[in-house]
Amino acid sequence: MSYDLIVIGSGPGGYVCAIRAAQLGLKVAVVEKRKTFGGTCLNIGCIPSKALLYASEMFEEAGHGMAALGIKLPAPELDMPAMMKHKQDTVDANVNGVAFLLKKHKVETFTGHGSIGGAGVVNVTAQDGTVTALETKNIVIATGSDVAKLRNSKGETITIDETTIVSSTGALTLQKVPGHLVVVGAGVIGLELGSVWLRLGAKVTVVEYLDRILPGMDGEVAKTFQRLLEKQGFSFKLAAKVTDVNPSESGGASVSFEPVAGGASQSLGADIVLIATGRVPFTEGLGLETAGVALERGRVVIDGHFATNVAGIYAIGDVVRGPMLAHKAEDEGVALAEIIAGQHGHVNYDAIPGVVYTQPEVASVGKTEEELKSAGIAYKVGKFNFTANGRARAMRHTDGFVKILADATTDRVLGAHIIGFGAGDMIHEIVVLMEFGGSSEDLARTCHAHPTLSEAVKEAAMAVEKRQIHA
Ligand code: NAI
Image (cartoon, rainbow, N blue to C red):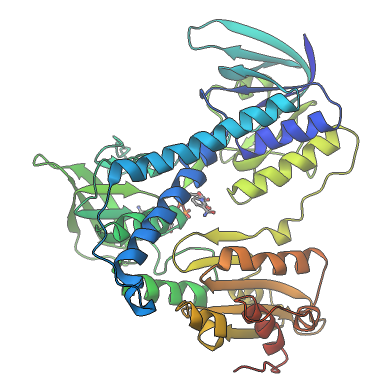
């Protein structure tokens, strides 16, 4: 049996690429080592974390948010097995959905470890060791990423046992609410999963190397976000480098850290330690060296059309350059399938949104103020606070703001940053605007329904020219 295309890995990059290629008439197979499709995102990442984020947000609302709306409730009781069942049901529905879609599009699937056996050959090693060799014209590496190892000050890898010292995977399957959760790293994973357990009753301390949270996000947004998280109960130890994490004999673990600027080492006792210091591309056992596929700092090197240095081998998603985001991988999957089918697939890397699914949400697209300053680009800022938005007041969700950054000369929107309830959905009108090369005036003159939170987006666009009405 010979294929036009074999995709190794069935995460959002891989399965989307396979389906799009099949739509375009190619004969496609997917190789997946997990029992279920969907990769990290559906099995142990985006989807289960969102199930727990939503459930814990409702728990928090039921406990604290209802009385002010005139709804009196007894103190809510946590039913952890039921909450975990909700999470698992969500995962199952999503992974089964992918299996259904692959079948519907007649994509053949193989369970086992995929590796490149030479030009046009993919070997699938099943769990019992049997190897099946598949022939194909094109190979797509969509193997995603894995948890980055954290090393102690002696250079030894800190062991993640997934029960006391956990990665995001273990943090999604805790059996009970920890008394004290120490999170290493104030990135997206640390703040999302820290939020889950804080809402369910844990004390949460985040130790972060940098002097700010959410590296890469707009500085003003990050500052506001930190203040709001502290109000919720988060404690931050910033500019602090974690130098070791050790299990304690009495249970739990201790986290040692020292000021980045130098100074005495300190330690914190924790019931659970979540290591959330980044992810690295996953290329182990893929046969890339034998096939001669070039890597740079662990990432597969590709050209502007996702082609590696070896003819017929392509790569997309977390395993290549760019942000490690499911939707970026999906768009690359579509573009690559179209290119292989002889069309002109394309991804606009200037308009990829990023969302942190906390409460409030943080969403951004395009350049931050810091990036524009360092690139020497003159820009104008339009900002609008949710405190001045009628719908936000009616919902008691007045924290946060919308900020739009537009080119000072052309008015083209270069970036937008929203912190507030529903930010992750609101950002998309600005993504579309940027995709069409729109200006702040285009947005300011677009009618927005009243009363909606999205009116704050329009007002921020109007504020670029200082003509906002409600502030
Ligand atoms: P991250 O790269 O976002 O943050 C890691 C943080 O750990 C950084 O702030 C870094 O300075 C800090 N750090 C590193 N070493 C440290 C040390 N020794 N001591 C103290 N702090 C240290 O990584 P994260 O949160 O693990 O996420 C991994 C990837 O997954 C990211 O690319 C992220 O975009 C993606 N992701 C995206 C989500 C979303 O879009 N909502 C959700 C979850 C993950």
